[in-house]
Length: 249
Image (cartoon, rainbow, N blue to C red; front, side):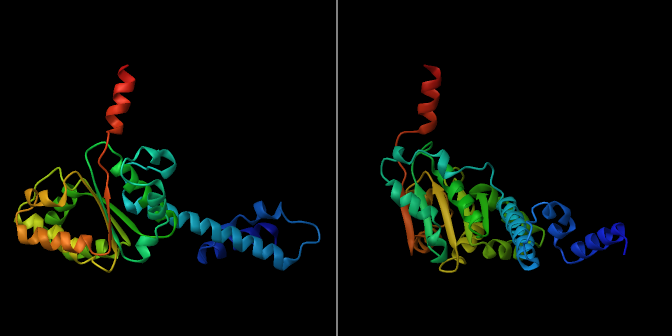
C-alpha cells in the first residue's frame, strides 16, 4: 500500500478506536531508538495515549466542576490562619475525606480565605480523579427551584448526587423560603454518608435558623452535616482588608 494510503488508514483506525496518539505516529517515530524493540516502542505509544487521555479527563472534570475562579493551595499562605493548623488543611487537601464520605464546614468572617481553600481543595480533587461540583448557595437554591418548575428537578438532583464532592459556597448571604429550604435540605441530606459536601458560611450553626424558614429542618440539616465531618473555625483578620490597606498605604 502506498505511504499516503497507509497514513490515511492509520488516521481512520486511530479515530475509530479513539486513539489520537496513533494518528500522529510520525511525531513519535522521531523518538524511536536504534535497536529498540517493537514491543518497547508500542508501550511508548500506549503510554503517550494513556497520558493524553488522563489529561483530557482532568480538563473535563475541572470544566464540569464550574469553579468561578481557579485557586490553588500554592497561592494560599496557610500560616495566616489563626485557628486552623496548616497540617490540617494539607491533610484535607489529600482528599482522603472524600473516600470516607466526610463533610467539611468552614465557618468564619468574610475575607479569611474560605472560598479560596474550598476551591483549591476541589481543584485538587479534580486532579486526583474525583467528580466535583461548585455552587453558590443562593444560585443552587434558584437553579433547583427553576428545575422543579420546568420538570427537570429529578435530573438535576441525580447529577448532584453523583458528584463525589459538592462545594457549597457562601451559605449565609441569602435567606431561603420554605420551598428553597426544602430543596436545599433534600440535596444535602441525600448525600449524607454517601458522598462529601463542603460548605463555607459566615454564620455559626446557632444562627442558621436566620437563613432557613423552618427551625426543625435546620436542626436536621446541621445534624447531617456535622456527622462524620470537619468543622473549621476560619475566623480571623480579613486577608482582603489587609491587602486593601497595604495598597492604600
